[in-house]
Image (cartoon, rainbow, N blue to C red; front, side, top):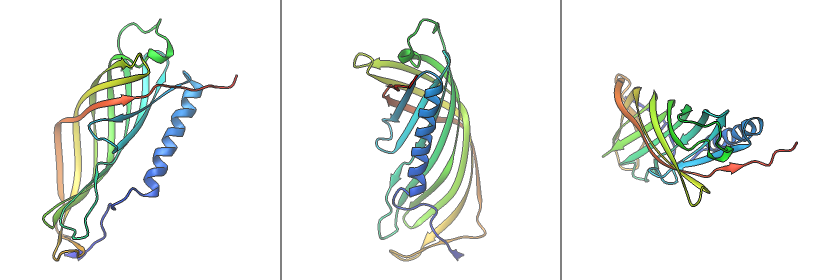
Length: 211
């Protein structure tokens, strides 16, 4: 076994924060060229651990980007750890008659989508853990309703798909010590089934675009 550095840290890195800002700005720029609307959102099933933005394209389509970071900081004894980060993209087709809908209501109702996500994880229990990278993709169904007189939206979604991951095993041999990776251990994970569930709070935001 050899000494190794942890893939993830106890705090969000500057790189991760920059990713959030960059994709928010991309959403704003796209909205300026399309509907003049963007839809920042967060999944209430992961409170304070994700951020996303969705942008409508025409009357029936939308694209979205989400950054998820379920994060339980590693304590000084290095006994347990639960850290995952992942960046997701999706394209969505909205069902039903939408020709007469105002811009702020085009992302309401029923829709189906394709999604993909990739990231890293560090999962440890009782000084033994796994670190790895993953990629997944699938299809989902989403239903969005207006709340508070349309000032906010609530989205309910479920998705299934395929996940692939490669993980390495490590151990911490003394309290507060470093992790050591088993260089001969490499586990491949392939899974098909439910991958996504969401109850998202959405804040429709209209941009004031210059003529």
